[in-house]
Length: 131
Image (tube, rainbow, N blue to C red; front, side, top):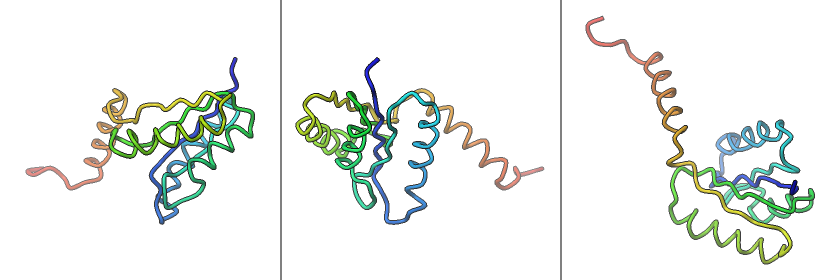
């Protein structure tokens, strides 16, 4: 089996609590024990940046790194910026396979998440009219 790491990538925020979601996800995935490293990284406004995170993955022994965008859609950041970072890391580490995953956007399980969030909000929201 090829030693693989996950490099989770979010946009990043100046507000630390906004970045905590990605750190929480990294902690959960790390517990699975399937990867030599699971690193949360950020495009901007928070640390570590993507290149630093990629280097941490390789330092942990990864021979393959999956760059996983924590983005809903494949906009400019995913299609251009993240592809450029993937290329930069691949050039720095030519013996390591750098693979960019698709964003979350059209994954079918996201529909279930939206349904669940809606149900929870409606239970906490205002009562229906006429009741």
